[in-house]
Image 1 (cartoon, rainbow, N blue to C red):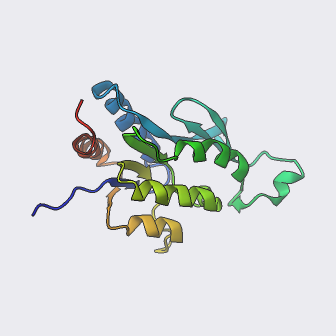
Image 2 (cartoon, one colour):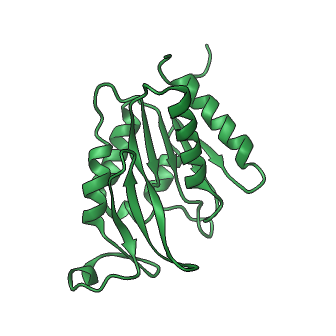
Image 3 (tube, one colour):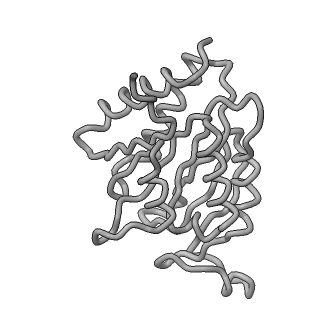
Amino acid sequence: MAATPSKCLLVTGAPGVGKTTLVMRVLESLRVSHPSLNICGFYTREIREGFDRVGFDVVTLDGRQGPLASTKVSSQEALRWPSVGKYKVDVASFESLALPELQVKQGTDLFIIDEVGKMELYSPLFFQAVLNVLESNIPILASIPIPKFGRDIPGVARLRNHPGASVFTLNTGNRDAMRENIYTQLVNLLPKP
């Protein structure tokens, strides 16, 4: 009996190695080769001022966007937001965009989740939505951070160690080959056009 192919493809690697870029290029290739696919999800985009990264936005695949985290928040409410390094995480904004994109519904062919990391995991509702997607048998392409100092974030470890997950470690030398490999695996999981 042949092994069942993984339905959850997780891209990991050092910060700045190109995880989001890889996910977006695979998505663009799929939209060209399979234009009728119903793909749901989101990605995160850096906000820069000059050479400095000052935050992140969450962007849905249909183009809606809002803040995920910023160094530039000054409201009283923001003082109560959780912190990751120098960033304050706007959990309510993140949930308002990400959660509707992760609803398991008939006709969804693929979920894109960039990323499942420390900022996003401040939302227990988000993590539960990711687990629901994982159990839905609908293919997932997601990015996750690499363990820091040999320690994984508990929610990320749960995904990484899921029996239905395949982990792809990205580096500057394997990006193109990795993109082709992930694209091919996803095409084999998707409904035939």
